[in-house]
Image (tube, rainbow, N blue to C red; front, side, top):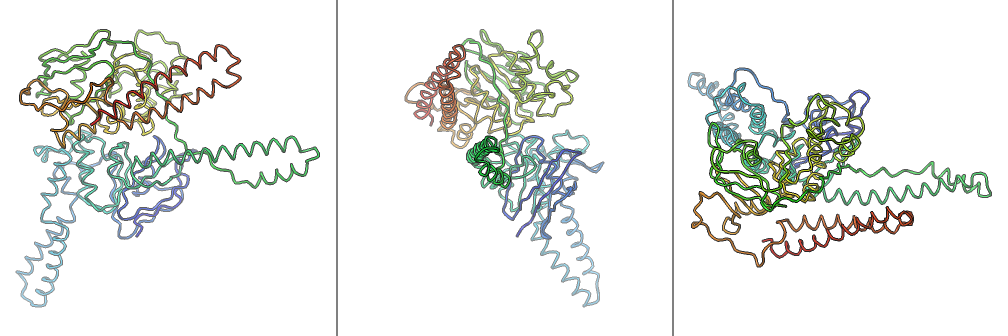
Length: 629
């Protein structure tokens, strides 16, 4: 059965085409992740499927048995209702059935005509059957389960909706959709405004349900767990891939390889044919040239590869700092309530730390305290010798709204020539007129990339990033991950993006019940520790825990020389660098390069640098294979 049949949808906004022939099907059991770069039309497509907007042409056929539920990004509520009232409204049909069952029971008791009693009894039996089938006698339990899972405090259930924050209102919209239990769910960024615990709860809820799902999300960990098929929307059309996000990412690279080879081979043949025609149009081979011209006119050209370009982000080489970059000693902080207490930890040069914890746990506050932007209430927090921090604020407040982007990224008190700034913006995907626009005219993703470019200009050796992946699409996130892994300084970040944390971090600090636990490793290591704490002890923890009560962690056979990294990540970087080295060596063999002594020396220096980096990576890989356990 096809629940949703989408055929050749097209949509324009003014002269610009957004959708140029989108076709796909959604069947029972499908959980489809819809991915594509920012601005590719994902939300436009979802709104058309949900009946909120109309397509210019094409069809979207919905099966009569399909009940479609749509999660919008902009919540709307009726005035005067409480959180609990709105949640109940999602189950209005069941409440109506309950009310009717009570009314029919009362009518049976009052009826005197046997025929009427029989008719009412049959209706009552039908209503009872429906109430049991739809679990209508557990409405309150169902509401509490969903609201608890999305991390609404019980005391907020009677709170007016108008007094909720924007994030809480978005979570309430999600709660209403889940309670309504449609058999087709269209979800636009459902994990926005959710902390890690609530996101994991949502993943399990969706997996336990039977609804067909079409979801847009930038959360790759979420897509990996939930999706069993992936649609890529790019250049107005969709390509379908089997499996979750990771399967799509791998298949995408394989398809691109084939597409590039096929396209380039045909382009070479076309150029050869054109050259033959130009040289022989008026010569002895005129007939052959004319024959080839006719064949060229009939040729079906291979489409360009569906290549989604990622901005080539890069941070400059870091100056050397002292071995200890940050030291916290018995630090505590509270505002209206305690956030963290008695925290002691060291961050050493070259490490990449991720700070995790529920919403409101104090992650940003701890990060600002570690930077010296806020004083601790107790204890000490100090930066080490020679540490030059650079801070990415999730509010992007470092960028002046009324300034041109090329001017807004210049750090205070620092002279940087405009061509240098424009080249840097291009590395972060802001080219041409985008660099000259005012900051206020940028999209969220563009503004985020501009803030990262400003961070790169600060020449920091200690990068501190608070939710840097907000507003970035999947390709920009991948580019940022590579840039941070290649950065030779120290990194401290706060992020809800588990995939991002997994690929970047070699230490995880978790704020939990006012304590900070430290795990040596990435997000997967942290999850393994939660599942079996005895096998993965924290590298350090708050001194409030009695050291004598800790079980000593099993020690590796030898001490690490390199920071913790996953073997797969190392292998990926080795492959990238081997490819780059091969390209450089081919370039060095180019006669034009060899004739230019200065250029040849520059390329030779790059070859030498890549060989040195590869040797270190090989050593790091051998160590990771031996010690990662």
